[in-house]
Length: 309
Image (cartoon, rainbow, N blue to C red):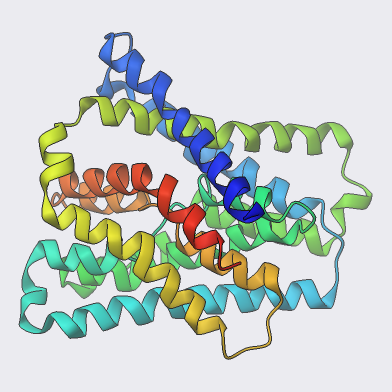
């Protein structure tokens, strides 16, 4: 029950961050078309600060390094396996765009800005939980720009290994991993480490403020009455985390590892879905609705799933 209370409180706090953005948009103090600037700041400044902060304070051990690699493998396996399983079950219907979006959106979550604060709170004495969020984010980018973009478009020409590896989140995780191996916690100035910590702390509030503004600009009827959005949200918030959790059961893994897999897999639909939809000019509204509805519903689903940790 402690895990439920801690998780519920932290998820509820993150949802409350939606409220200022929502109200400011309703009061016409900000406009949705202005979101590009804070989104860029979030992606290129705050997000990398968050990932660097998670890695630079750790003590180097062979066991932790091995668990980082293992976590990437588990998250890659979970994402790819469920995506392909959904496509297989869809059969010929996978040609429909909305159902292809179902297979992608069900496995791509907000494991960084949303997931990291939750696993930090759930495992306060295990700093590696935040690092697992970084590893999950690396696998998410790899899958999104390879299997994901191919599934969405049906065209191999859109697969981009460069986009999968050369992006702010993955580069920040790579830089943080190098600093970790160099034992930066012993020599990196406290002032610089504090700067990364401050930038990282800004990530979640800024992400949720942006979502709040988007929520205020959405048509509530389309958000809450579109069956496919509810199906995708159920796949992301319930099916995918339980699928990933089941993958860990045959192995002798510690509770923090297994719990982090479950909670990070249970995070709401990621904003990268909207990025892919924008790039390929298809499904923007569906992707935005999935991100928003799954975020709202996560205040119930994530605390309930935390009871399994």
